[in-house]
Length: 201
Image: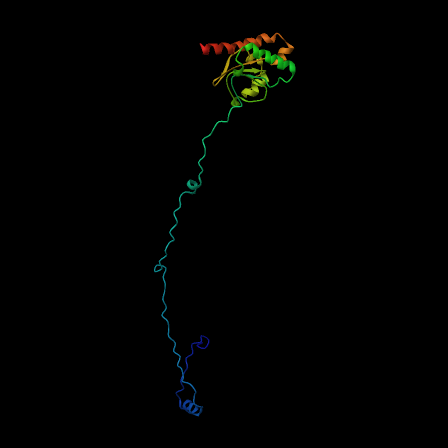
């Protein structure tokens, strides 16, 4: 067992036979080195005696605060149409309808710089105007994002939407098919003209 542990010391022979054998041997060329086993004290380490130094966390500022971007204030998009008066008629593509609309603009007797005849599709939030004429029920519903079912239910009345006063009237095609409708269109336009006169007074 001691040999397996490699802890065997060098033992001296003390019996007479051992002395005889030792005297018959040739003189040793070197001194005998005695090996001693020195038992190292066993140090028991308990969990209580071990001091664990906790790693101090690095205090960092809130990442969101560091990376937050300063957002510019919300800016409303520039209106597509800006004019005191807007005549909205996107469905008038033929020459007779164009001529009829030009006659209506002249009949209003308003300064040219105050009137816009717009024939491209736009919506209410793209327009900045005070007085608006919507030609045709379909165009009016699209412009207002409404669902009016009959023109008769909304025609002949002055409507308001925010700061905008508007009327819904017949489209040029209907007036060309039935010239009697031109009178009703003029009555609708007069509602806006009267509102303008009242505001100017």
